[in-house]
Length: 504
Figure 1 (cartoon, one colour):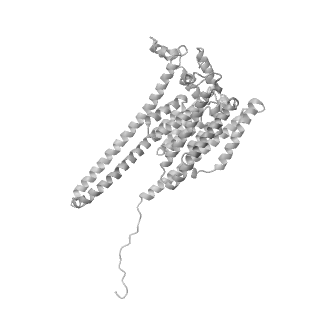
Figure 2 (tube, one colour):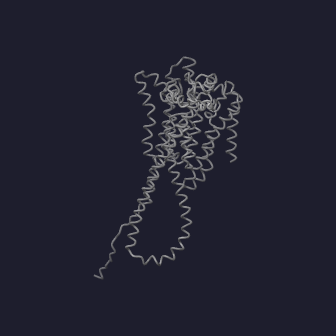
Figure 3 (cartoon, rainbow, N blue to C red):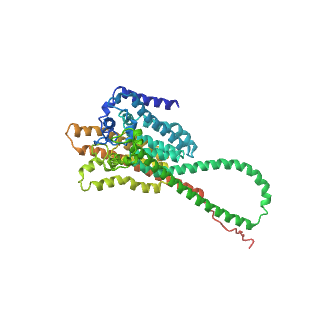
């Protein structure tokens, strides 16, 4: 606890020092941390436009949903030096660090190997949470007031609630993540799978506790009844076997029906929360009326709400902007270069294929790793972050911490030093190549695209290596189960008496 507290204090002090020396104004101009979607300057401009009675989505800068406008309506141009805003973003990073610590600790409790459990409980949760909290990329994202920190917080909260088998809260928090960005909506399938698995494990643990208490009582009763049971006939045993088979079939059918109900309930809750957030944002966003009380007192409320001019117009500037990738400013991702080089005729087809990659990849992954939902969550979140339209360097430590949560996978990974050195070289060359192209004008777009392509390719290689190690772990577990279930095979030899010649 002392080590963890000291690391948290160190991370807070680094952030406070960065704010004190005004590093936010320096890093606010870096393309690695600021995108058109996560920029805090765009939010300040949108609040300024809304305060003067004009639509915040009038220009092509602000693309966050309207609830964020309502939450940060007190922000202005001098808010970079506001300590209230700084404390909010420091708290977001701190909560993410604590959530990672709790999630890893609970995953280690489920391990069967007690020796490994005792070793890893001391090191792994503190190590991974400190890697996230003390990482320079997360610190700079906090200094820049990156709005992508909210999505990372919501994803970790949803995983934590799913681990505690709370389907209502996990779907609600995941709907908040999908409300800010559309792509986290794909996490609903592994999240429901994880909730169902955790509920079944909790139910089994409760049953085991009750069974141990009942066994002590039954042992005494069995000793008295053993003499009576010997007199029971064979016909009664056959009848009991038939009844047990029928009961087992009924229990299987009931369990299947319960699983289907949980699936339906989880999907219904997720889309219900999401629709409710969209309706709230429609109430908040209005170019003419900024106060909700005046809107509710309006006699023509429903006509005004469902009129063609004000019917969810913000969706075009938020979700359609993310899916259609209209802003092609250079970033760490790959889509900006691919869409600038394509012809206008083929643009929509290319956008559809690029956005549909995550959906196609989710189907085989769920079929293969449906019994390992936590790993499935880690893979889907990492694939979403890699194939984002507007990624940042702050997504990289988040991706790394999610993939390293299970210690079994690290044993079978290869090329560790190659990946570490490769990421160091690639990240170090991002800003020089951007400067050569944009500021100096001595290079071209291929410089930045080549280094960003190598960065995303290295991330995909890490993901593929983790999938390979997971496949090895699954096959080893299956082999162990087969060995336990298989009965030992003995060669039966007939008992033959060996006769000597004298007997003959």
